[in-house]
Amino acid sequence: MTAPLRNLITDVPGLLVGNASDPDRATGVTAVVFDRPTPAAVAILGGGPGTRDTSLLEPEMTVDGVDALVLSGGSAFGLDAAGGVQAVLAEHGRGFRIRDMTVPIVPQAILFDLLNGGDKHWGRKPPYFDLGAAACEAIAADFQLGTAGAGFGATTSTVKGGLGSASMRTASGFTVGAVVAVNAVGSPLVGSGPHFWAAPFEQNGEFGGLGLPHPWPADALELRIKGAAPNQATTIAIVATDAILGKAECKRVANAAHHGMARALRPSHTPLDGDLVFAAATGRKPLGPMPVAALAEIAMAAADCLARAVARGVYEATSLPFTDAPIAWKDRFANR
Image (cartoon, rainbow, N blue to C red):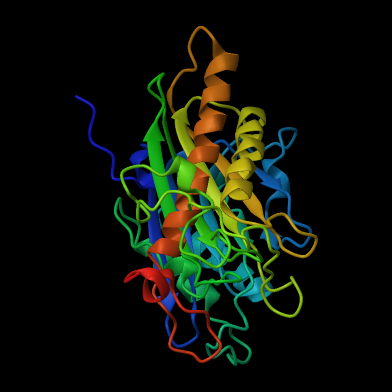
């Protein structure tokens, strides 16, 4: 019998998720750890990404699988987080074997959360290596959404951002899931009201069940940009499936999943954000007799899950206790 879904990326068999957060610094790390080397790819559509070890994900590169994927706050400082995840995985003998050495393969992406009010004066040792190690040690099937992990210090142009996740099963029986740190340059909301752009994809009232606004607000299409310049953002995500895919097919899924980000955030993929999607395939279920159709269905599901995950991350967020930080959706709209 098929197990019920948690509506988390961990519904995809073969992976677990861990969060670690630093409330005083208003930042954090999220690690997705696979139970074995797993094919993965990345698609970057933002103009200002921050990444580590993503070149090896291209289909022509030698390494076939990753041990973990990491999302982190901290801008470029946060790239230390993958080292912490690597250290923990190496202790467990995980990684790419080179003679008597083992190197865990841990690509990473970061978002900009340096101006959210938290204390970022950390001197010569940013906290991200330790946060990465703590996130890896905390992996489980259940994990916190909202103001947690890589989404702890995340913001958008209108409300607090956060960590979101969603999952679904396709008509062909594949499980697909997404996890995203929503730190958008734009807005997840239609105009100045409480309705989410992702409303058409919502399932079971997972982010309030409000649907789209009626009548359509006059300010719905007004441009809303975070900060004085749109370089204080980046939304980073991981989508996964239990299908048997290679790196090239994962790349197709990552590309398609960006449509979910674009449906849920307006604007997205701007010149100065680093909007990025990783895609991974844990290899439990073959594509079957019509592989192209099956891949298209998985890609569509990845986009839908990512749109829902974006809205859930915002819906589940709680406000930061700092003057300049945007208020959370629930604090602003829950009683309306």
